[in-house]
Image 1 (cartoon, helix red, strand yellow):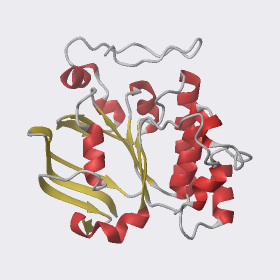
Image 2 (tube, one colour):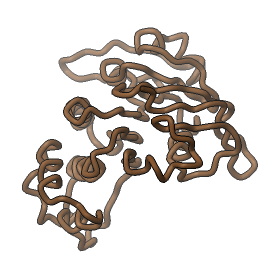
Image 3 (cartoon, one colour):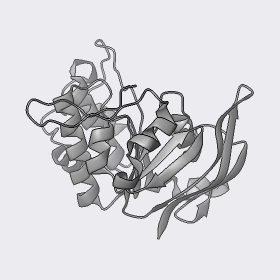
Image 4 (cartoon, one colour):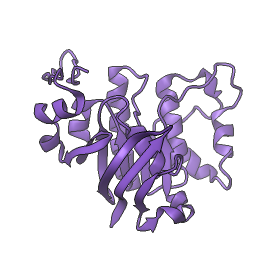
Length: 246
């Protein structure tokens, strides 16, 4: 079954075209990555799919349900945004955060915290948690309702290289255990290459799509990021990420 269908989607904000006639399709159970330079429209594309921003034209279907009936599929969809930060003085605990979900099952909460490796943090205030711990908590929060499709916007933002590898491995494991479709925005080209089954390269328009080996080439990345981009080899010891030079 097709989890996500986007047909000729255009989004204009403040008189500017941010997403221009993009069409793409994601099969159920796939893990796909959206890549492209800053300002390419990736986050706007995802937020429009989630009806957080209005579309100008085009069609979106989630599990076959038209955008206009999004409320019917909303319980199947979860989203973890970019740049999750909490003030140090914020008094809400992890347990109290999960209590905000109406009808939340305590056993499910415990299970989700366990599968993301955040067990034992229930009594901690959100403001005292590290960036990596917050990533895990909000991923667990997104999983509580047993979503069928999970959208993640730059899940490694603010985490060091070791943390990036940890969060990506965590997402891979959780998506397999929960049998979810995952749509991921990322700049981590080297990690995407080994993580996603399908890659969509976006810069306002959809420039290309396909398996990582076909899309993550120097020619393709130059089209997306500009002629100054280079690909550098990945060296496991010590760790040097093979990010494009952008």
